[in-house]
Image (tube, rainbow, N blue to C red; front, side, top):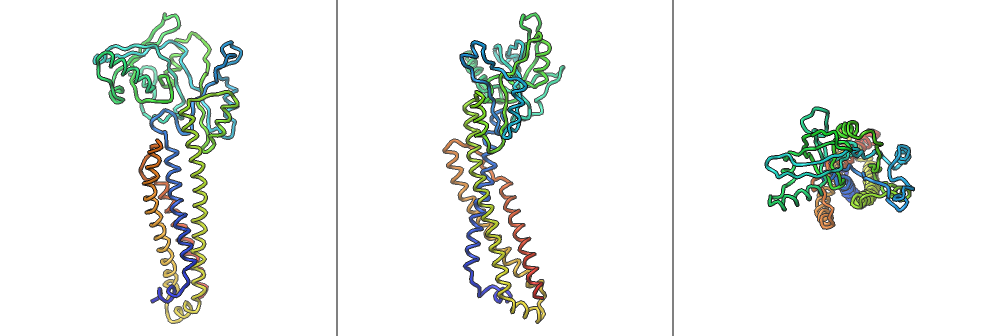
Length: 393
């Protein structure tokens, strides 16, 4: 009876407009947060680099060949780059200052040996996470991350030797060996080593920092350690500024890294814009719904006062308004989620066709945003209804 008395004979145009606005706002809110998270995760796991991170080096020119310009980085250069407001962090890529050879040491695999170039990067920049990525003198083996191109070369050798090619998992089970030596080859040391991951972004074998320090201290014969590559991590959505910095300073990076960085920056900026618009839409629609509730209460002053006088408790009337609008917003949220799943199917298909393969699972962050929006609305709705109803009691 209360519902018919309070809500039946009301103009619902304002309510419908607010519901449509809230529906669109919630749909775009969930969608933008979901794809913002997924695009930010794009490229993780498959490569060594963390988010928005690139490896750069100085461009080699004719003056570099004549030794008129340097191709290595000084400490002061790294500090100047790090001070830029759009740069999150800068770290050197340390290379070996000694001779290293890499060979198979497994009785089931034919002997394969090659002189190699090894490097180490700061673990903060790495997406290949493993508890085995550490080394101390006396450890059983040295963990390494191998360039995928090196595995291709190894498989080519296997094929030429009449041996089946190996997968990533099998490669990580094979025993290998490092031979470290000084420039004159008068000092040598051998280390067992195992592959713990692969990278498409770095062309050298990666080793833990402690192992590199050990080799450079013991076998480099005091040669100066030069930094020819650095890792730059840019802030989210500001990759264009990083690209401008590279151009101004004559730095270059791998094309694939630049493409992924640009893609994430452009799409991230677009999604942030949509997120902002959808947040405003949800906020404004919520205010319109609350204003509509206040309008209903003001139009039903006589009915509410009469109900209170004949014995209805104000709380009963309050909860009628509260549950009515909470159920409306709940219906809007449910429709928004259902429509999100509908359009997600098509967006995922478009991204797959374009070669952007992202995780198809639902991000908890998008559902959390919806829960926060719903909680804020019903909280404001409750206190507004309480204030207005109690004025009339």
